[in-house]
Amino acid sequence: MAILERSPKTKQGKPSRQPAPEDALTGTRGTRFSRHLILCLVGLVMLYPLLWLVSSSLKPSNDIFRQLGLWPENWDFSNYEQGWNALDQPFHVYLINSMIIVVFSIVGNIFSCALAAYAFARMEFTGRKLFFALMLGTLMLPGHVLLVPQYIIFSQLGWLDTYLPLIVPNFMATNAFFIFLMVQFMKALPQELDDAAQIDGCGPFRTFLKVILPLCVPAMATTAIFTFISTWNEFFGPLLYIQNQDLYTVPLALRAFMDSEGQSMWGPMFAMSVVSIAPIIGFFIAGQKYLINGIATTGLK
Amino acid sequence: MSVLTKQAPGPAVGAPLGEAPRRRPPRRKNQRSGYLFLLPWFLGMLFTIIPFFASLYLAFTDYNLFTEPNFVGLANFQAMFEDPRLLQSLKVTFIYTFVSVPISLATALLVALILNRGLQGLAIYRSVYYLPSLLGGSVAIVMLWRYIFGNDGIVNGFLGLFGIQGPAWVTDPEFALSTLIVLNVWTFGSPMVIFLAGLRQVPTMYYEAASIDGASKWRQFRSITLPLISPIIFFNLIMQLIGSFQTFTQGYVMSGGTGGPADSTLFYNLYLYQKGFTEFEMGYASAMAWLLLMIIAIFTAINFIASKFWVFYDN
Image 1: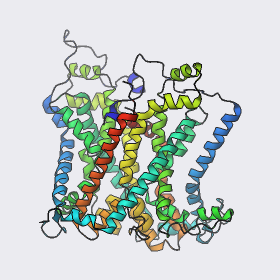
Image 2: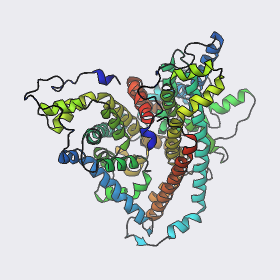
Image 3: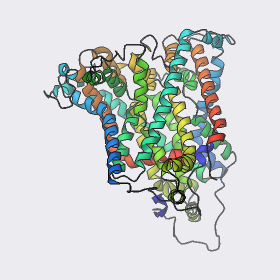
């Protein structure tokens, strides 16, 4: 994983590093205009499916495939009400189910990955380098290799049809990506912080909790948002472990919706699709800074 | 990172040094607490390593979850190479990967280059392009794709404006996979954000020097930009390859779990799921997982070897 440690950025003593390279804000007015035009068009094409989804959720089912336009001719808000009650349980049950898994996964990932990252980034002990290499190795391991034995273990523990197989692994720092993210972040903090804390009589755990952790809020926020989005979207895990309809997560509920009503109740189905992606878009808007910094960091450091 | 300028809120910095002369204590060397911090991770590793070897063992057995595994040697691997559906699933996965990964990386780089020209509204464009990559793997969006590309969907509606009769994208085996390739390209935003961050690290001075020497824009791109961001291209390539080899949800939702029409969206992992968890051929499924691991390992190794010839590290 040499790529992750080496970077193309200039080290100290090399030429200046300006945020905006090349012809910043230059170019003739014409070229700048044409760039904006291209970017806007591409953006519009990319957003169009999402806008169409929202607009379709507000149209009567019969109009959806008859009108290409985005603006509904006949507004129909009843799609939301119908969709909400179309399955065995009202839709908020599935939202709550997903939320339970998400909350525990976030807590687990932050807790276990921060602990591991602190050890890797700021402590000395025998085997640290070896363990770190092992951790980076698991970053590339395709999950399906572990699938069958893990399924067997969970079924023997009697955890099928519970959320435990989806939650517990997150408390065991199995997500190497987040450890890596936090290691990068913690390494950038000055070592003097630990030294000073030690002089003041803090043990390693107090140093971690009172000194380092409060400084890692941005990295923890990135972890929380990424965990939220990937857990909220997660389809394979719930598909494998959850059979009981009352325990369905949002993606499972949507799939069930499509299987049972997908041929006719387009409006209600699109309405519930909007409901299912709205939290992601909300979190994205709220936490953009952390997301974009986080994803940029993974490729650069 | 702005964090460096912040003060620690705890008692740490600037607190009076109780007993005087002890300067700069050694870096914390505390074996036991190091392992204590890693305790959850050790448990997780145990939960990774044991299944890892267990699945290697199961790959050589006939196992249905209900009776004891029965050692059969290489039979699973032999059966795989005679299994037409397995070969089909490899084909689907390879086509998907080798078409969509280059297109989305090229798009990501191109858009990042345009965005990097110091245009106003960079943050807005970046957000708009990045958002789809958060949604591309969700059931809602794959479902939406089914209807966008459906017979009366907006794609055919749009083609109809030009008098073109579009094909039945979703139900025609020739076209079903291409809709998912489009979906994957739609999510080019996440490599784009990484490219953008990399482009911003290229020192302006190089371009100034080059333009004084009379180098064209294209030449500057070839000789400055491309070599300096090659490590990032490499990183994105590896990550995208590994990710797309493991595609599952897209194929499952698009085909209602079957991989159809005519197995045209039967992704490797979808077939693995069918074998392991609907037919309960766990031994075969484990062997499939190991074949995928080997394929990914080989491609990653090829990439690492090839990278010596085209990836440039400046330190």
